[in-house]
Image (tube, rainbow, N blue to C red; front, side):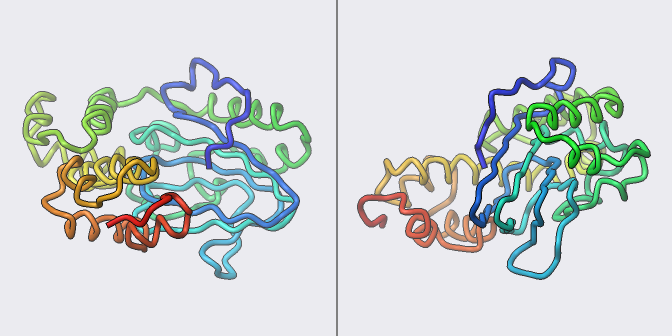
Length: 259
């Protein structure tokens, strides 16, 4: 989903928004979504369904941490705009417990703390993607509250370390008890710090796999701190629904068979 337009995130929103993306086309599209530790907001203009079901998603919806793999399907001639948030900011924007949105896609108008304006209507009535992003930026700019800096530090450290950091040392550094750290992490991120570390580890591994530069799964497994190849495959299938080999075949990643 990395279709990045030449649009800049306003400085005041950069602590909240990690990146933006945009796509549209005449054909139907399918976007597979795997766990990556981030949340976001999507606006879509022509109908989007979830996982080959008849469940039609709202034109503007917020999604939390994605643990189970999903596929978003769009109709032909569908424009989609996405804002990807940093992992720890949902409560600082929408004033809710982040765990409420884990594995959920919720109509933004149903969230209790959002401004009482018809955001989808404003976006529908604007043709320019630049102007639509400006509307989204303005909307969020009125909602943001200060970020929890301890959770910002914790998530940044875990992601930078690719999941291989001591959580005990981390909560000690933040001067928090283990239980307080876990409760606050779930409140702001939506999942436990251990599971977030597993996702960071998985993202590092799938990045290496997608590079097409490795022919042995065991090399990827050991490079990313998995106990062995089987351990890596179990976590990979948990987050993607397929094995690494199936993933490579589905995406035509490797020129040679991986072992």
